[in-house]
Amino acid sequence: MPQPQSMSAKLIGPFKQIVTLANLPLRGKISDDQLEIIENGGILINSENKIEAVDNFEILKTANPSAVIPSTEQSSPNEVHEESQLSNSPTLQHSNSIVLPAFIDSHTHICFGGNRANDFAMRNAGKTYLEIAEAGGGIWSSVQHTRSASEEDLLKTLLERIDFLISLGITTIEIKSGYGLDVESELKMLRTIKKAQGFTKATLVPTCLSAHLKPRDFDGSSTEYLNYIIERILPKVKEENLAKRIDIFIEKSAFQPEESKEFLLKTKNLGFEITVHADQFTPGSSRIAVEVGAVSADHLEATLDEDIQFLANSDTVATALPGASLGLGEPFTPARKLLDAGAILAIASDWNPGSAPMGNLITQASILATYQKLTTAEVLAAITFRAAKALNLDDRGILEKGKKADFVVFETDNFQNVLYQQGSLQPSAVYIDGEKISNL
Image (tube, rainbow, N blue to C red; front, side, top):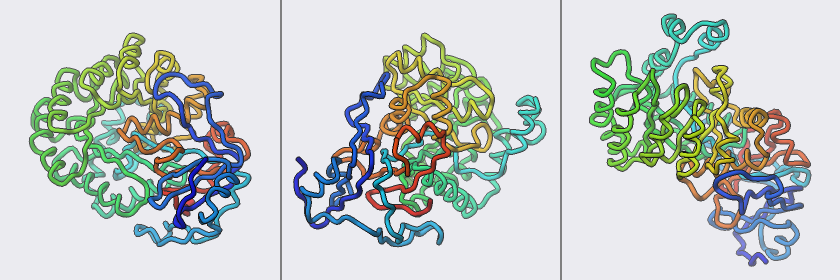
């Protein structure tokens, strides 16, 4: 029985269904009958804006008669945009709604300048990567546009993308650099991400991806460029506390396995967490991710069966990026095999201007589920607490006592409709730290 709380406690609800995602395994397959669903539920928020209890609404109300049951949510404006504010309008009637833990997008590239719609059109018309690059497209196009963009312009567009993700129910967002590829421009990107955190209630997790590819204007080998990152960029990143995570793209067109492994071990010795763009087009680099103790290996579209077991026997999170498969017309990550082998599977959007321009995590996850035959429970776990594991966060992704009070409300009588409608069912409310956000 929940213990009575002080006057500062807040009780939100009732909701027709609360899907808590509590008591589910961190790794491997999950059946839908393992889901904990609380009917006519409520969420009790304590004075520290954490979840105190999740239970039947009337039980919580009886046990906590002094808890505030808000009819309005009054808060100060968000500092970023005049139109992006915490709600001061009446709370939605939640009795015909369902609640899920807020979603986590553990792999994005949403800090960038420019647009690569022409790349997408050319690729669909049958042009090769080389032909697109020769026409002025490709990653180098994004690098040029990002380098030329002012920090103010980058901040403006970044905040617009963050607001969009919040509107989808995503409240924790990993954001990579990697379109600067020199000291000045990489630091500009990471400073922009850091500045953006002061203007949003969402949690932003910056990752330094200076090792995206060797820039065309670098006079030296790829190994020399990786040393340049370690010697010139990372000291500034540490000094200004711009990122605690390092990423690298291991691929024939980017960095080779041995030099990448050496780079990762060096950055790990510098105190950074590491993650890897692995097995996107060619296999093998997911093994490097496991060998160096990476927190996650992302992409995995080309992962071989023997490497699936290697991942499953590790604590490295296998992160599927269906947006890249959709954007490039490539195979999907073998998510079903990974789960059956016992791996920790996360799903992220890979939102970027080139290969994954959609940015809609729910749509992508729903489509991946269709092709890979994933249960609803497996998909929800992959975009909540398993995605949190990919970011080394253990305080969110589950609705239970002590967790961060981030959750998303959908106006529907059945939680299955969220994936069934493949992203067309939009949240009716998003809560961050127990406060309702109104930029929906």
